[in-house]
Length: 367
Image 1 (cartoon, rainbow, N blue to C red):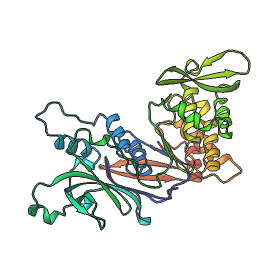
Image 2: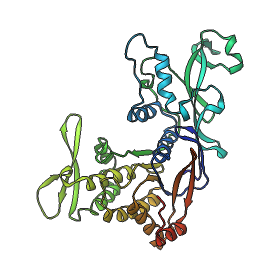
Image 3: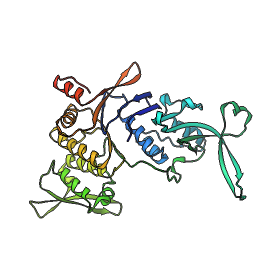
Image 4: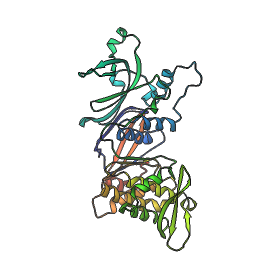
């Protein structure tokens, strides 16, 4: 679990430091203050800078630039693509230009930066030949010919250089670094994710399956069972069995709310000892069910050791969050973080349970 978070040079976050995080963290703020950006940064941290995940983030923002004709230079296109990740889209080769995400004081962070490098063939003690990429320091640049430009992904003391002179360099085989964090990321439009069937398979016939059923009862109290059936060889969809009928119904026919809850809970129970990231928590959810869902999320995050980060624009979502945080006999771990844009710099204001209760009682808008 992260007890603090520092992000540098990632998108519109030149630098932000959140000194104390909790088990469940709700992020608010006006548009373009970096709410979704923090979730993206956390996803990069949890996956140890996995290029496949980074490519997905670029693709969703329409920033996966492609070669339109053979005269375009691939390296320049790929540099433009990955530069989209950096503050002001700046391409710099100094260590101070790097993106860094994580807990800096503890040395647990992921960094990304552009580097100049050369491919060098080396032999080990047994005479085996291997190719190694050597970073060229800035003061040696003029002394080296035919260097290449790559993206260095660094986790701790281990670094990998991703070549940018290839077509779609992000599609290489990458097994990740050791000790990747368990993580699920629910995007804004993920009412019914394509991977839900696989997530359900992971928890079938375990106590976690019952957690899912109980969550669906928030909207449909007659929920008895769910299953996933194959529509096409590549597509499976959820069906539901209600206790008051023998019919099996497509879950899709019951509205966005119950499908959104299924997506959130399946992601949650598949994030044991890891992270759950939810963008725009309230999407598809009526205000009357949000507090009940927060109650389940708080309980399961404690039981399964999951750190939750969610964003919202919704006052109802904030009220539900605060009510659960302050109404339990048990000490729940949660806080609200509001992001503000002050003259182009993103700053945070943090509210613990007591402060959030006061804000709600005095009708102070913390969005």
